[in-house]
Amino acid sequence: MKINTIGVLTSGGDAPGMNAAVRAVVRSALDRGLKVKGILRGYNGLIDDEITDLNIRSVSDIIHRGGTVLYTARSPRFREEEGMQTAMQTCQRQGIDGIVCIGGDGTFRGARDLSLHGIPCVGVPGTIDNDIASTEYSIGFDTAVNTCMEMVDRLRDTAQSHDRCTVVEVMGRGAGYLALHSGVACGATAVVVPEIKIDVEEDIIGKIMRAKKTGKKHFIVVVAEGVGGVDMLAGRIQTETGIDTRATVLGHVQRGGSPSVRDRVTASKMGYEAVQLLAQGIGNRVVAEKDGKIVDYDIYEALNMEKAFDEKLYRIANAINN
Ligand code: F6P
Figure (cartoon, rainbow, N blue to C red):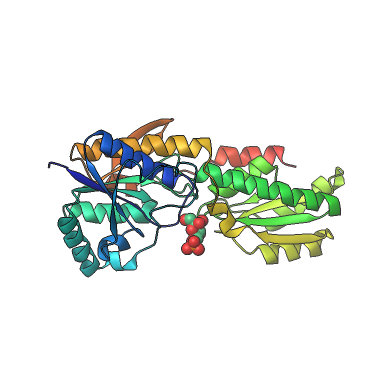
């Protein structure tokens, strides 16, 4: 299939580095002599015909910006056949021959369905959750972990000043990667993730009490949102240990901010690779990172992969944070 014009969209939760990926897609496509169109607000843009022409200057001054200049959305309408048909008509009318879809697994499912209907799509992983099975790394994770680290460091200051325990919930949807990495980076006494079953009495209360006996006076417990319940946990810690305890939910602050080097560089590489595939008429693929290299997989294969939790890092956290 001859590709003349490609579209680019961001879908699902925004992630720092999405703009760097959009920029890479636009510049790489122009470099290959393709035309590029920006599809606004995820798959909704295809249904509502919110499409804009992009040129080399359209993506100036965005590499360092958080969020996504293309806006984003989750689109239930696109999952209906009627929405898909409207999207297909928009592609035909706009002359869009292929699309780079930046987002998480939900975005990849949309890309798979569009590919099936005849528009080749390539997925680029972008989510702070780093929960996409097909890739070791997704754009936005590093920035988000750094934000969590900075925020928990601040909580540590006040916890230390008051001899308190701070229980902090970080995002991650059903996955504990953000919690695990921030817990390690912040030296949290306990990290609670959905992937590992724990005994609160032994693994949190007991651990705090044992550390207290060695002279430790302030404590950090990082909890993944997939486990939740930070208010209740904080109450229980306070009652059972006698340590004044506060709960904090970090929330959407984790999604914003200027992307880190890791996110800008990865986004640039992945955006470039996605265009190289599409330019050859190759669709129904996702770009991924494996052993530090950029690879690509069939979307069906990618969506059926399973992500192994980093149990070794979890063990390390337990061994050294006490
Ligand atoms: O997928 C990214 C994410 O921030 C998750 O960590 C979180 O569960 C969800 O999106 C929040 O979604 P919303 O922005 O719609 O509240």
